[in-house]
Picture 1 (cartoon, rainbow, N blue to C red):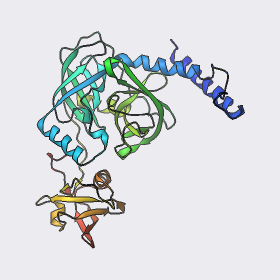
Picture 2: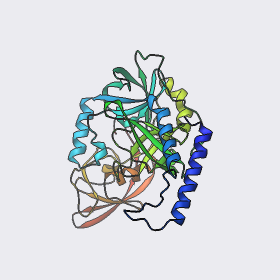
Picture 3: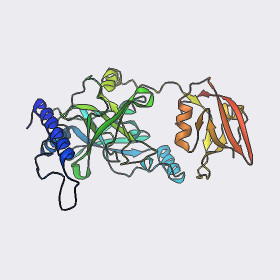
Picture 4: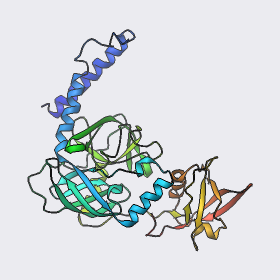
Length: 354
């Protein structure tokens, strides 16, 4: 097996060879590959495989039994034609063992769950409980019951954040306990209020909650979600960075959840129909909350908040989340043939609201 130093050197050499081959090769055809030298990318392929093998034994499956409220919400999302990722199948997601009894996964995997089970790579299941959640990083820490001590774990360190262009290898729990591996790069840092990394590696129902590692097999974060707008396997997805998780870990291990910072609340329920032209229909205004106080009504179609155009539920959520309670925003709605503008003072999101 390659050492970390040799692996990094091999990758650098492979990329140099690959770029040289692309620079000097004739245009490729089906009969003639860009390079006749099979060693050009062999080092890179070897490095990918070695990095994945290093973390794979620590990646587990995460199964959940949803509660009644969560099942009803999932049914509502299907009727509302929300992004397919929200309509996840009844198959395991992924998690990463950072201690024999502790597993990290994506928050939405276990949100609303009545029961959680860890599916081991070697077979078998162990019951688990949600010890704490971290809403800013969109992760959950699970405590595994009756966990054996002799299991593979991934060290969680506070290493520096990867820079855009760094390799990202995503390792998830696949069917039959076999690893799924998707590769890409870190596309951007500081997404969602500076908290998450963005990657172009494919994220799907199986590898969400799994490990993201660099070319040396070192953990760079936990896979939390694809872009809901672009969808699964779209090449736009997000990772909670290991450094941020390490900074919060003592709090989470103590069983203390970290809530989302206070954010504005409009106080509406959305209609389920898809609109043309785009917008978001108000199905209900909640009594005593911001929308009702400002005179918005059921049937109004929200088309703009501040300087943001509203096309769907996701864009509405982003627009509201960017403001704090007490801030005033201009909301533009279509009411029949009329365009109506209201200044709305946002309230604070009740704890029972999603």
